[in-house]
Image 1: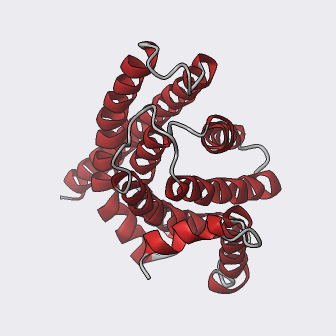
Image 2: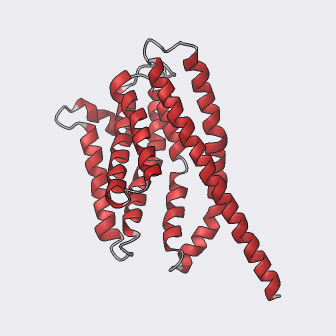
Image 3: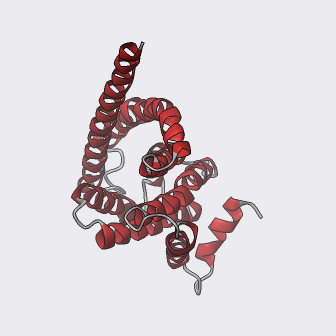
Length: 257
């Protein structure tokens, strides 16, 4: 049974709603990571490592599932009705963001930016899934764009957490940083804004007002624009830090000679 058949079969089982199943899955992965996989790591970074593992478990699968869910619908479009498969993919992501939100509220309640990001993302996905029941095409494309860098980002985050006490982690961090920053910049700085522009053009025409109320799509656009803006600022700062670090190493090398 392929992933599409498996995930699309879940909503047809009334006794086994997919959202609780997905949430239980992410909770189990989180606890496994926290108490077994990363048990020898410092207590200070163990929660972050566990968060990275559930992010890894969500990110790349979400990209493939989102693409499959869109391609499986021959009538997909900005105003098309959500299919059961698309709704299941949305619930998969809702479960992840709820679990990671629990992580931040428990271990990092002062990380207001991340908490706000998760709440805003949940608003978009939940309104698409449970309120308007339309627009999954747009939301899933945005989800795929957001998660396509997940593998690189989580490996980068884990190596960053351990680079001070692990030579291998430091090497992975140094090797991965430039390509990760480049991919992230292209996705968040170019592909994302271009797709959002297409959304604005379509929804502002009024073509979907009867299925996606104006206040809903305006809210979606506002959330996405803010998320993209923060992402661009974040990666810009990383590029600046990388330039400073590389410049420092070059200057240090010249002095040694």
